[in-house]
Image (cartoon, rainbow, N blue to C red; front, top):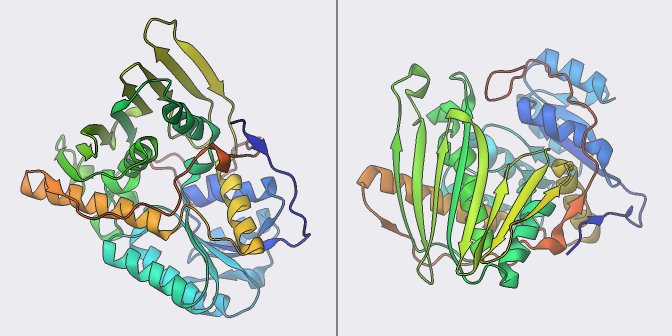
Length: 382
C-alpha cells in the first residue's frame, strides 16, 4: 500500500502539547517535528535545567510562563493550557508522570519503553481508563513506510511462509548516559532491544511463547551497571524463531532479515529515525529486488496521528497494551539471563490492532539538525 501524504484535518483546532523532558531525543527529533504537523503544537516545556527552559523556549516561541520545573508539573497539568503531555523522560519516570497526567484529565503520549515493570504498565493503562484519557506509546516505526511495507510483503506470501527473523542493533553509548544506569531503567534490551522485539512481533503478527537471553560485557567501566550486549531467542507459535543481538559497545548498525520458505527480506537501517531505509527482497530463482524509502519525519507522523485520535475521539494504536506486551517480553528475557534457561510466557493477549501499511503517515524530513542545549546523543555528541 502506498504511503499517504496527509491532508490537513477538517477542523482548525490544534492539539496543545507539553514536552516533558528536554534531553537529546526531545530536542533532536520531537520538538522540531511539530512544524511538520497540521494539527499539533508545542505550548509548554518541563525541565529542571533553567538554560534548557530559556533557550529551547525562545527557539520554539514558547512563553516563559509556559516553562515549568518538575516540581511544578502538577501546576501545568491543572492550568488548562495543554491537551497532551509528551513524556520523554528516563524510563523510570514514565509511570509517575503518566499517572499524574491521567488524574488531571490530560492525554498521554509516552516514549518507549512504556515503563520499567509490568506492574507499572498495568497501572498506567488502568489510570487512563479510569480518567477517560487517551494513552499511546510512541512506536514511531508503526507509521514508517519501510517497516510497514515489510509487514505487507510478509503478509502477501511473497517470501512464502515466514520461518525466522534475525536482527542486529548496535551503537556506541557513553557511560554517563541514563541508558547505562539501572536506577533509571536503562539497559540494552530496554533501550534498543525493544525495537527488535517489536519488529519480530509485527512481522510474525504474533506473540512469543518462550524466550531465552544471555548477556556479555568487555569489562569497560561504562558497563559496570548494564551489560555491553545481549543476544536473545524468541520462540513463536508455529515453531518460528526470532533472534537478535543488541549492543551499546559496537559500531552503529540497525538491520533485520526475515526468512521465508520461498525467499527473504532484508531491511537496513531498519530502526533509523530519519534516514533512507533500503529493502532487498530475494525470491528463490529471481534476481534480488531493491527498493529505497526516502527519509521522513517519523515523530511528526506520531504527533499527527495521536492528535487526530484526540480530535476524533478514537482509541490510539499502538496503545498501552502494545507497550505492556513488550515489557512482559523484556521481563522474561531478563529472567532468562538470571536463570540461564528458557522462560515461558503464558497468555499474552494480542493487541487490539496490529500495525499495517494502512497506518503509514509521510511527513517531510527535517531540513537541518537542530543545535542542542545541554544535551548529547547516546554516543556523547552534543
